[in-house]
Image (cartoon, rainbow, N blue to C red; front, side):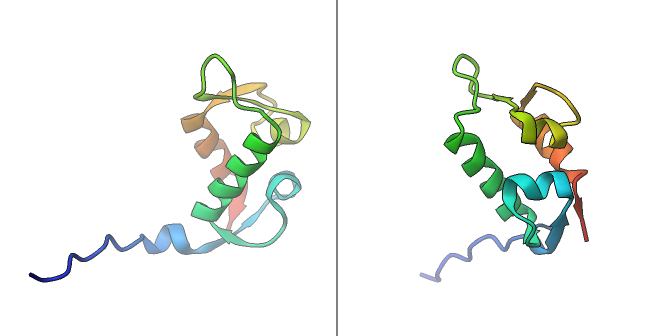
Amino acid sequence: MAAKKGRKPSAAFMKAMTPSEALAEVIGAKALPRTQVTKKLWEYIKKNKLQDSKNRRNINADAKLKKVFGGKGTVNMFEMTRLVNKHLKD
């Protein structure tokens, strides 16, 4: 039997992106691929207990995250990804 080939990650996701000042306060100023940005964002959310206790898909923003989320106090996981992408540049 031939070995199964793993899924190759998309080059777009692996390209290092520079975070904006607001996002850098949360994840650091170092350029990272989108996958690592999301990972670091979740580390921050879990460390600061910002995930909503009733609806786990919602994130309750603290002062730093409000800057990233465009002033919104609560966003869902999918909206978070869209908002964070605005703070990344090549």
